[in-house]
Length: 157
Image 1: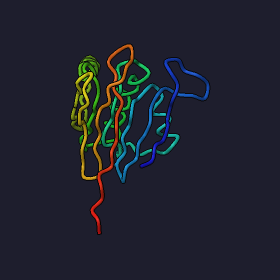
Image 2: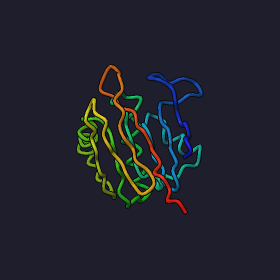
Image 3: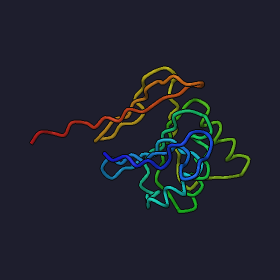
């Protein structure tokens, strides 16, 4: 696994630091963890291929963790994405995105598979042949969850 820190700053923008976003690479799959404003610029700077992002995981609904998501989803549409995108996040995220898309009359060229995790519970939110992702409830001012990535054991030769 490789982790690329796109941004690590808190709520206010700071020179040379960007809002929270990380890319976790496992095999050929990319996972975007949080998507603050400016994430697209950082994705371009580090030459991350949008088409390889399989899953977006949002930790909580403070703006510095998700306000870049609507723009990113629209950019994926403009670039012709057709593959489904899994979005995992707290209750309310689906409603926020639906409201923004409804009022901007946006329809995406690809399906979104939503998973809203249950606050204060550990939950399996993603699984493929190589790894699992579970939520880890965290203490914060609002409901919040971290994500635990576990690689599956490779078969013994």
